[in-house]
Image 1 (cartoon, rainbow, N blue to C red):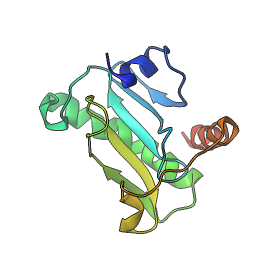
Image 2: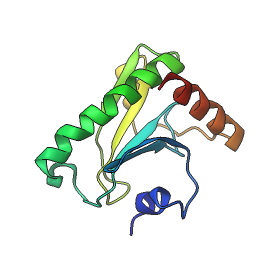
Image 3: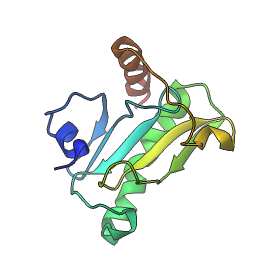
Image 4: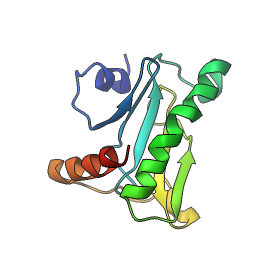
Length: 129
């Protein structure tokens, strides 16, 4: 079982943004910027392009209102989408508030936020959903 499945099941604490029967969205605890959100299918699949076609299409539709909420909640030019998939063997997409392409540079140092800062970001995004 991946760390993402453990977060979905509540075995590991997380900062939930949205959920339905097929997907789960939560704040990345190692964010590039405040508002960095991960979206994962509830079915564990290692590689993004191994995910079933119908699930891929639904994934973007699930992500769309979340991206819009992030854009309203966090000052940014837009929300970038990235699929890297090297850290955890569970397909996932990153929604990242960005002002330049460099804001999606995953080799940069990650932010270290307090639980209070994570909750504040979570509340700002949830208020926009």
